[in-house]
Image (cartoon, rainbow, N blue to C red; front, side):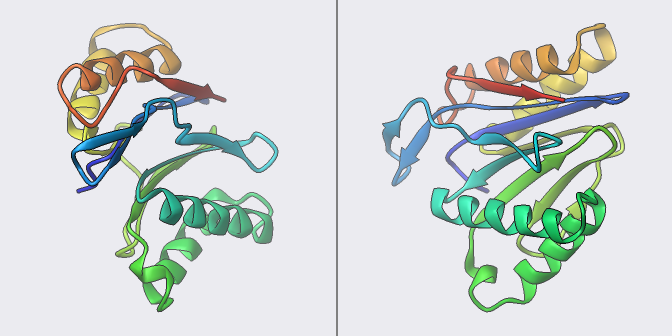
Length: 176
């Protein structure tokens, strides 16, 4: 598990949102930065990406993912599968320690370096040290409210930040 961040994504219909906290923890005992941006829009603003793990590794993987999107004309499903295969098979990439959530208006995936590409049944995903808390909160909010995905993602991350010491309330929310 990555002790450095929390990312949560929620998809309802064609609307999707991703949220990330801003805390960067160094050596598991010191906060180095409180307002990092760990979520971004890529592929001309049509795809959302959030990452957890080593910052340099996560940025490298995000760049690789953007290359795959370009090569596959924005086909998200094909791009994540190709990224996972390369990530697992490449001698350098397989050492990268990170997880990613990627989403567009059609799909939401969690991608890992061990080759997993998971499309959650309930269109809710969370990664990072506060991921389990954010996931539980997002599921409860989806099942018991009529909130939009962006509101759910933000509230779920706020709940995670109140529990997880590696997650803060400097939240960035992006939506499609």
